[in-house]
Image (tube, rainbow, N blue to C red; front, side, top):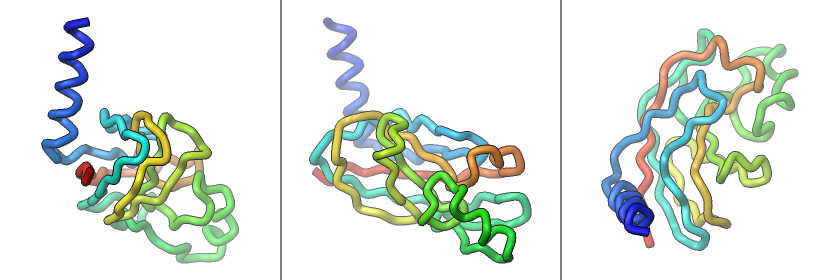
Length: 140
């Protein structure tokens, strides 16, 4: 019981420190170590740049620069969001995917662990490079 209380207190302290979290573009799921709480409001701010093969962008991602990528847009993990935009998920649930981008305020629809990734085709993470820094602030 003591360990559980200590872990809970430590998690709360960590969530309020606003330390940047490294989001690696090569990882299909980046575990942020943050547990979102249903109904609470959060502010997400992402800085830095990451690279998809030869295209560098910030967390807002980029639009298809050519016909081939335009044809592949429907294969992205979140098809209606830009290539390499920062995407969040609660507990790796596909139904909970949401666009974070470089700056977002968000009310968590359910409680669970926050995971993030660069929006890409699931089999194309091998040519990704670099990472961005994500800061999450609880507003409630």
